[in-house]
Image 1: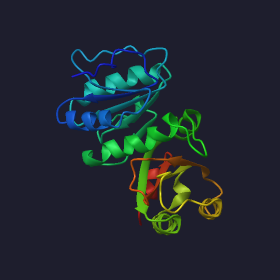
Image 2: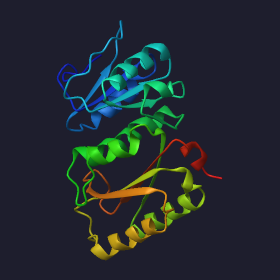
Image 3: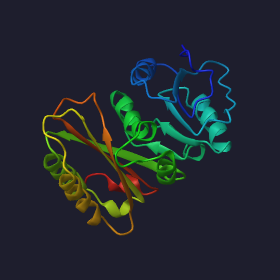
Image 4: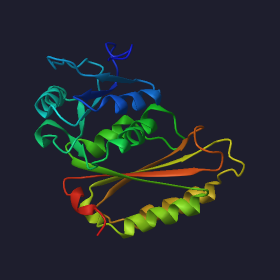
Length: 238
């Protein structure tokens, strides 16, 4: 079930464990993210991280003992290790995704990896992701789309207003738009969005990026926010 690049050193690895996870891995594979390998783990579920590995995402719905053992191998090697399962053992991971729907996994993985594997207008690197998720225990992602920055800005404000953001340690905000859109994005619009960040709690570390995405509809704007921290479970809408 491994893809043709699974046995080559990759900076970022996405590993599926157990049944019911093949579809998720296949969808992640179709994203064709540079430097990202996708694979289905097979018995005896023993992994030795490559020296080039920087991040490992472990996805599973069963076989939690095997999945957590794989994760722990990467975690002990100093690889940023992220779990996608409610049965993920926090001691084996740097951060666990708070999401019960497997259908959302590929898009969330894209939200995590796309900014760091493609050049942005305002860049976001692996260093930034590592700083946000390393030993954070939990993270969640909120995404929204609209036809202009004002629309997605208002949607994000509404989401944030319904959450206790003091429970988050880090918030990463990523803006995506099609460079071929009929109405160009102006710097003034981007600046107006950045004003939202100045109103977030002072205890939260905030970083953001601006990215091209030619796969979006011509006038679509997409915004994603990654919230991480040991108390981020308490951030959920109240």
